Image (cartoon, rainbow, N blue to C red; front, side):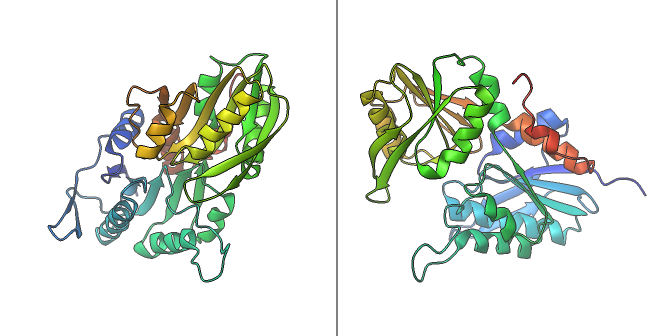
Length: 315
C-alpha cells in the first residue's frame, strides 16, 4: 500500500503564510472554496480528491476570531467526510489561549472548549506555535506538536547581539521565557513589575535587574494593544536603558496598538507572520515562520521527530 500523499489547504486567516509553507514543502496549495453566505454562514468545499491523503489545514484564529475558528472546524469536517487519511490542524496562533483557567467565578475555560471542538470536528492532531500557556496541550486527547518561534528569532538576534544586551520580561508570567532567551544569548536578565488596571491598560511599578546603560530586549508571546510593551519601555528608559526592542511571537495589533507604537518608546518590534501584520511605516520587523512550519509538516508526514526543530545552531 502506497504512503498517503501530503496535501496542504488554507482558510482565509493567513493564506500568504500557507502559500509560503507550500513553497518550502514543494507542494501546491490545495484547491478549496472557503466563502460566506450573505447571512454570514461559512461555506467550504474541497475542490480536489483527498481520499486517503494526509491533509494539513493552515488557519490562525486571529481577527475575526470566531469566523476563522468556524472556517477551520468546517474545513476539518469537510476533509473528514471526504475520507482523508489523517487531518492535522496547523494553527500558528491558537486563539482563546488566554482563557485557559477559571480565575474568577462563573467563567468558562474557553481554550479547553476550542480543543474539544477541534477534536469533535475530526482533527487527528494539532500543530501550533508558542501557546500562551503550556498546559493547553493537556486539553487535547490527540497529539499536539508545540513549536517555538525562538529559532526564527535567534537568527535575527545574531545581528543585534552585543555585550551590552539585557533580556527583560514585561511581567512575572513571562520570566521563564525571558530566562531561556537570556541563557541562550548569554545576557543579563530583568523584569518589569506591573499591575493591570483594565483590559487595555497596565501600570508598570518597578524594574528588577540592572538596565542602566543597556540595550534592552523585551520578550513576550503575545501583544494586542501594546500597552504592556510600551509602558515597560517607558519605565526601562526612565531607569537608564539606552534602547528598547520587543520580540513578540504573535502581534495581534489593533488601532490602539499602532497608535502606541507610533510614539517611539519602542525602537523596534520584532514579530512573526503567525498572523498577518502590517508594519504601517512603523519600526515593525516581521520574520517568517514558514520554513519552521514546513519542516514540521514534512517530519510529521514522514513520522519523524520534530525535536531537532527546537535546537538553535550557532548558540
